[in-house]
Image 1 (cartoon, rainbow, N blue to C red):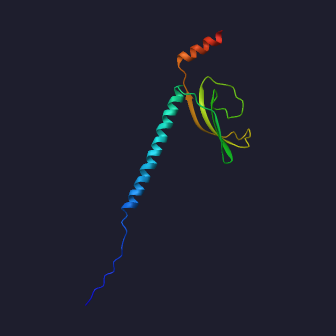
Image 2: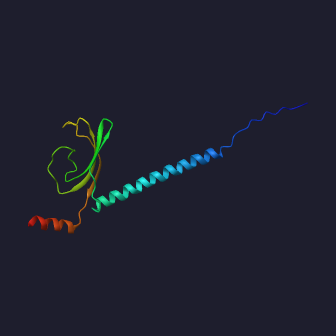
Image 3: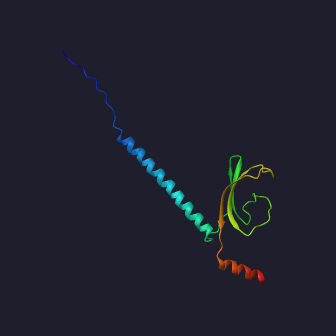
Length: 127
C-alpha cells in the first residue's frame, strides 16, 4: 500500500516581514523628524528668535495662509484693530472669501518679546 503525500511549497515570509518592518521604521522616523522640527520651529518663533514667514499656498478650493499679526482673531485679508499681543497664525481660507465665511484658523502661536526689544521700541518711538 502506497501513501501519496501532497506537498505544497510555501514561500517563506521573512523577506516580506523584513520589508514591512523597514517601511514602518522609515515612516516612524519621518514622522518623528517632522514632529521634532515643528516643535523646535514653534519654540523658536514663540521666543522671537526666528521671524515667521508669510505664505499663501493654494489648496483645493481654498488656500492656506500663514502670517504674523497683532490680532490673531482677525481673519486674513480683512482689517481689524491691533491688540497688545503678537501671534503667528495659519488660516484655511476659501477662495471666494465672504465676510460671513472668514475661514478656519488652524494654528495660533503667541510670540513673546523680550523686555530689551520692547524697551528699544519704546525709546525709538519717543524720538
